Image (tube, helix red, strand yellow):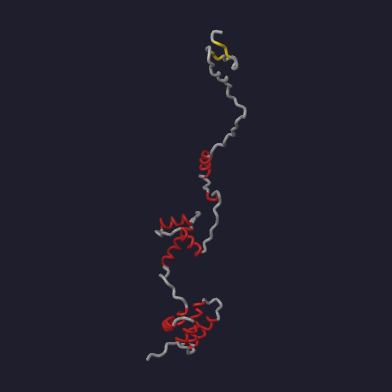
Length: 212
């Protein structure tokens, strides 16, 4: 019959667990594991630990086996997923350092394009922003005009070219409320039955009979 499963602590391990137990920022799950190891080292068996900590016996056994393999690291959550690619991270940060050292203004979008074109590093702008924040790079809004970057030899010619492209000012237009259109004579009234009537243009209100 195998010996009961329990945690065997050295004095240093016992003191380290006591220090963790009094840490106010300790996560509840980690605190539960610390309590289980201390109680197991004090002689409490697996079924009693499971009942006292309100968990299943398999959870207690898993913790005790991990403690035997990993020592105090067993109380902390084991990271999941792939480990970080430190070599790629260093390559990206070095490439960003070279680009930021140039005498020009960058945005995360232009940095993303330069990384892809010059370094064959394809990152989205939001990922570039994350790397810049991690590197401690500062940023500021660019001025409305880049006079601090103007070449004194090319600035006059460029200014003249831009002046030619400017729109001419609009001429204010207005309309008069008085109509200047010629007033036409009113239309002739429709002919009445009987003798033929013609319209007299000299007086829009008079008509004369034909042959009168």
